[in-house]
Image (cartoon, rainbow, N blue to C red; front, side, top):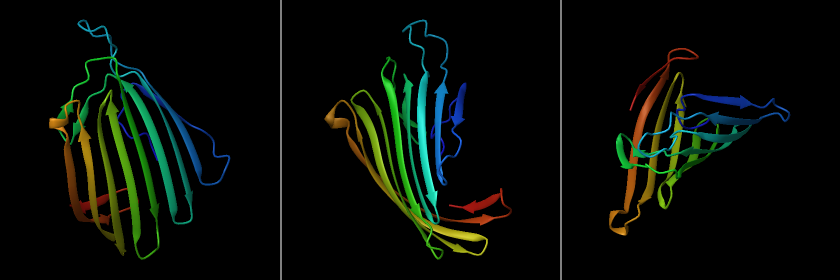
Length: 173
């Protein structure tokens, strides 16, 4: 599992594999210049990830903390963090490859101060030669500072991925 956020001006160190299947990484991110109006250096942060794979099992956990980060759902910005609050982001992912199908589960939580977004997703993919069909369902909640603004979110996605080569995939979603 890699660090989940796109992080400019960052560096990640992956520890050597001392235990087969175990990966551990740490990340340091250097933010932008201090804001002239707030004096806050947005974007400074650090992260940690750990993953374990054995046979068909894969488990991963990541956590990142960024100063002054905003929260988006898709392209819609729902929280603007103009303070020195930390934007904390954690993910947990589990999957098991049964050969004929691969079920998976993931949990994501992002919070800034008392505001947060949390979602759970379950999915299954089925290989068919070079193609793989999948369906996923997710649900979650957005907790803002005012309870009248709280909302629940749901989603479903399905599609097909087709491996053109080891590193290239065509997809329909």
